[in-house]
Image (cartoon, rainbow, N blue to C red):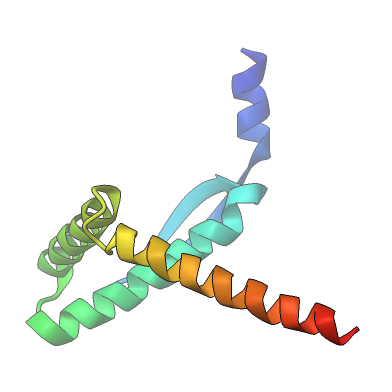
Length: 108
């Protein structure tokens, strides 16, 4: 019971605007910055999708949500980027950095 009361006390009101509509949401102080970042990201995605589809309202919201979910699942399943190639490139960068640092050590 005390945990629920403490959680309610930690929550603060936040007013956001998406697709021209105002929403009143609650979040903790810790979550506020990331929530505002999410609102900005979603607003950008709405804008991109609106330009592509000329849709609005609920259709725009659903199409944007579908695209974000698809992107998320691609990343979740590792198909959003080539992980082996990424690891190989990081390894090459690491080797180059170590080589440069070794040359620097010889100078001193």
